Length: 219
Image (cartoon, rainbow, N blue to C red; front, side):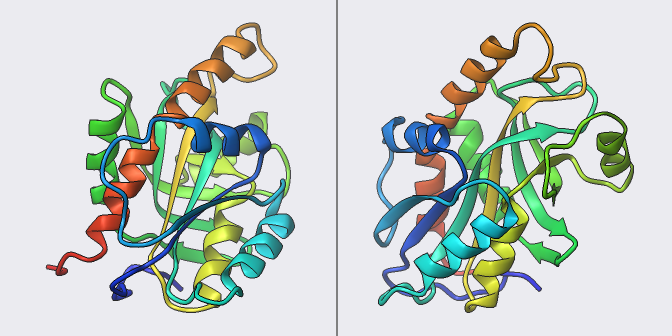
């Protein structure tokens, strides 16, 4: 399954889904630079875990006028690659979990837009895997061995539900809040969280740019 070949409409809405109140607060109060996209933008808090994400996204996309809505899953994640740092960005090429794999739309466009929106921050790309619980230690190593660059609890469920409700562009952008050398249980947790929060506040212009790009002819 996937959302990579979806023709946009002339006024495509954008839905940004995150799990936590602090993530929604960052996205809603962050930098608003750049022109808005071709349609209205909504930021919803789904709650934690894949089931909550599925329910919230299904409800949001079932409302009148939501047909064709572009969807971005965003918020924080755990990085899996050695050398990752809190505040690094992850742009999914695909999301995957036990329910399947969902291809993402316009990964390269999002990477370029994020480099402009958050200069100096490293942007990683690759598979973003989903989990129904917080992943630590050897389990993280196993996910990395399977090719994933990061893990979170909602992105895979969000995008899978989005494309099952109808054809639409989908993407996932996450900010690393902990990584193999910077786990949350260690000293420096607060500083790591603040760094990730500041980056998340800066990403919205890149989301607008991706949203606008959906109207451009595909090559």
